Image (cartoon, rainbow, N blue to C red):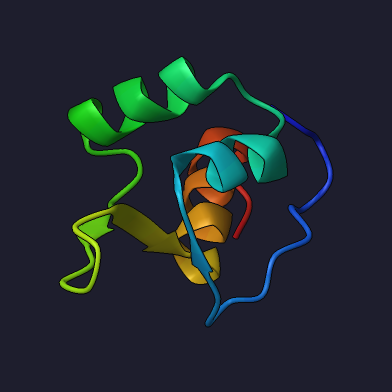
Length: 68
């Protein structure tokens, strides 16, 4: 995980791979974070893919570093 705040657009949508790149994590780690409830994904109706928001990525990052 990166020390500096991830460079994401809070209203943007990101798939697991993009979220992993933003947090500098492996995609499997992001999937584990989702399973543990650290990072929340929703399923898009259009193509049935999981996506999360940039705000959720930042919230996850803040939770790991206890940033307020």
